[in-house]
Length: 443
Ligand code: GLY
Ligand code: MN
Ligand code: MN
Image (cartoon, rainbow, N blue to C red; front, side, top):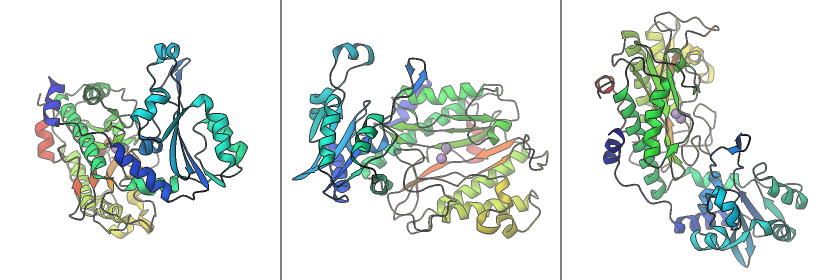
């Protein structure tokens, strides 16, 4: 069975981040804030899907990073009481409510099983937190997630400091434990993409390819890190297309951008392949160009490289190719234009990559292509390299030669920066033309 094949190739799931590591994160965070301050880290709100049905809750990445808490409504408060204490407010045990919505660890469970110093019920939070804030000089708080906490904080302070300025910088550099989880997330997504390629036939629904990928995630106690994009033909030229509602057609390329989460850590992979297993000549030319650009981008992922180097490396290859193929009738420098915003951007509209971690578009970076001269690549960062070229036949704003119309190609890998050079975490997912053509429809 397909899922078992993935399981046997996948190996052992790595352990969650240890309590010891989370304690160290707490110490690092507290060492950067004033002892007269209080820092409050709230959870993501529950959001309604339809009337009384909720979307599946996803923990807030900052709260998870510091405490590992994954239930709803948790609030971490760092306050100085002789030394720094991490207090977690949680929903109290309530058998009647738990009968409907699931078991809660409660106050005792939180203190027994989470790396915190103190735990209290949310029922006590209002008075309790107000007291803590009265004694403080300043507060770190992210507004807009937990309206109850927003109210308590607003009653005590007119202004807040932003804890993200400290936490984002910490989250940029991945530890050995985090890299192991990200490697596993990358492996699972790579193997899921391989299964979709193997099973693909012309005429298959985009949603059916999606179900193969997401079924592999679910079977391995994982879920998507972002809604899967499965676009065939012209749909592949819409960057965030995720309706996945059309049947594929013989002769189309399908673009699948899908990644999963393992204990909150994301993978993010894109592959583009012919649904009938054979690229047309035009598709092959565009694919080969994007692949060359992607390899140049990965090669540029070196310790000490300026943030924009990878985007510039991929852009240069793409611009050269667009000129060579006669798609742009100008010089390469003209195609690149001022600040890399020239006419080649008609066909490559997004950044070449982003940092990856607890959030798929992780904190601390911004998109490659953004102008962030202060950031250089350093060991322990993980970022995606994802150039693409898109020739939407539906585009009214530009003229597309019918030869290229309806082709959308993106190739995306996740890359760990190391002193020894870039390590492709998603290397298990084939991307050479011959490998892809051999794989598609092979099951
Ligand atoms: N999957 C979203 C992205 O590649 O950035
Ligand atoms: Mn992606
Ligand atoms: Mn990406």
